[in-house]
Image (cartoon, rainbow, N blue to C red; front, side, top):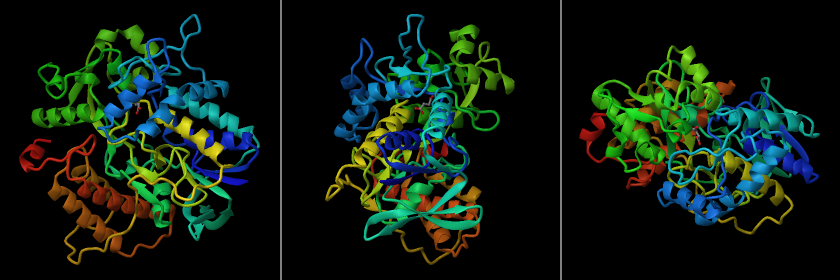
Length: 496
Ligand code: SIN
């Protein structure tokens, strides 16, 4: 079978390698260089609930609890049940997970996990280790690689995938395939503040929406609580809190316990909102105090964070550092079954691009690399299976574009204006009025004719389509759950 994989993070490259090993002819198409994208930035590790005091059932229970009750239990079972094989597979491909002197995997703790079950590589450089091992494996696996190729559209005839249209160096080409696996990541660049690298503009999800694929849960966008509040966005891993770091207000008090009994290890959405509220109330950033971990342990366990904080003028072994939330991870996406199959025959989606149902309204830390590895391999294995007559769509809906309102009182479109609108109105804390304002403005912008002359133009169109779909999904969900948090009075929001 001719298979095209679009994207080259953990989900895409795992799918590509497994598909090649199963005898398929595989082409990886990627927007930048092979391995660019979010995976390489991941500091958190891979969650695997199979240590001596742990089990997949406990890992599943934590995943479901963090999800606000909205994760699909069967998909979660597939995810946690695949952890050991996924970690073994990555190890076999050259990822050196951190181990104790006797060779056992070292397991760290992160928020909302009831056990220490996160495996890391290079302390806080797990994503970089995975990206480099998978890129090296891909380069030697007789897989065709097309770099700097932008996914312009999916080629779909009668609800069946036929290939992709890509833009390479200004010209458009059609690449034919029997199956396409989308692994283009999420859409963090919709927001003014994000941990995601520049190319994270939702291209795969937007192309799938244009082709009529079902999407769901787009209202669930996770904000990471602790980004260094100095210089360009730089994530300070949740594992630092897992090792005992605390969050302090301007009077040196721990304040997250006021929001949740687990304090700094509460689910991510709770911690992120508590930080945003406290920072707004005190008019200054809150601080992450990691001094109790000690300088030597901080350097050993978190070498990347140690280096970057020092480069930015902080000695975190001696003083708390300023932190603030930023957009981090899209829980929704293209609806798939547990084998990555979408509502379009022959089209698969894996990783952050997919809505597999494993995250619900709030992803558990370090379940995302795991998701890419588990479902990337499953999608490859499903290539040979007969396509089911109906893929179970679990509440998906086609990504329709709504008509624009007639009155145009909005500011002109720019990517920055869109990012600030999404940050202000479709962010950590939302109101019905703010969501309506955002929906109105996005619909006006989307209705304006916009020539697609450059990759940036295409990205902007994708971001606008996703902003519309996310905002409509947020308006449709009238109760707060997980990362979708609604305030019905403006008074509370004004303090944020
Ligand atoms: C982190 O290290 O805090 C990020 C891990 C994740 O996003 O799962």
